[in-house]
Length: 421
Image (cartoon, rainbow, N blue to C red; front, side, top):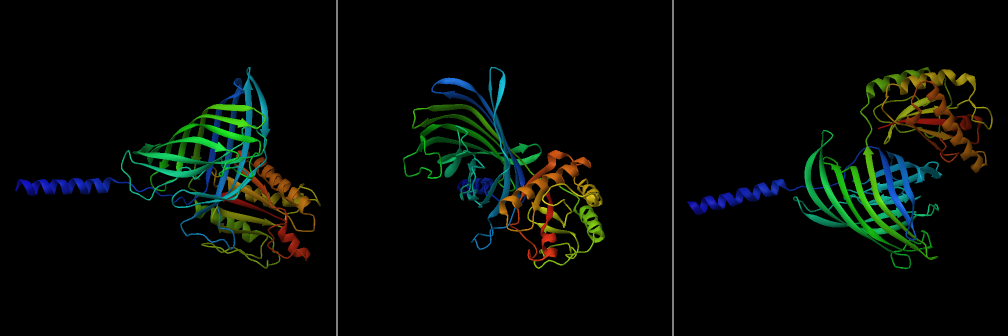
């Protein structure tokens, strides 16, 4: 009898042990805002040269995979813009090292957290971090996964992508700001050889070697595996061909924020109202595919569902020729759009400018960017927080109608506003 009780006890312990194990996987399904703050003491050839403070703020939206590219249904595709501001503090004086325009990025994240870059301009600086194992985990269990880090210590605008091998340790579950999360510890050594097999041919050719240590604390959402907070302690040295050595010590902190819940029914009702009231226009040859809502493609304002959120396409906007100055006749439309955006006060708004293609790609790109920013300024003047806007320009690269006709060119001269979700 005692033997049977002992066996039953072992069985119950085993069952409890099995059910306590955790499976980590990435299943994020929304866009997000990523803020990377860097506070590093900089030493050049052993001498302190100042405290480098950098903030990278990015707005990353869900998107569809590029046409013709093979992909798994479990992959998540993203399209983002990164904005960088950096300064060096020395003797209480701030010296700006650079304020950059939007830096584009397109990538996908697989279920195990591995990131594949499609459009790579150096950001995000941490890739495939964190990555997950397919094994079920108990507290204290560890695994190793390959990741990548993009660096530009001399601020040359040339990024070097260094492979890293990260050891992760599962530290258990807890609550963070009222949400169930997992805590993970991570550690790795920087070991880059500019002449080695893993060197980056696109990187800084003058970077000879890099070495150092990192220790990071990571908090991820229990439900989706999305990172909420990463705090990385850094001690790293970069050696260059001319003999220069740059040592960076300090902390890199990354915060991830996710879009707020919006009242979709109220938004759709308001968008339907202004779309139906918009003046008629020629039908496009390539009407957008919609879900859940039925826009009127013959209108000059239509809206559709996209992976990033509800998008309002404002077509045939009346600007002065070759200018971003909006004609007064557009004031009513801008007033109506502002009132709709006020229904999503906590959301970010992506404004994308498009031009007709008339054989001047550089000029078309510039004017599309200027017009996107002008629309943002006009909406800000109507009471929308200016910090909520992300502006991009596409020139004449994404037509929705035939550029060979005046009607088609009018439709292609448009601004698209997405309420990011």
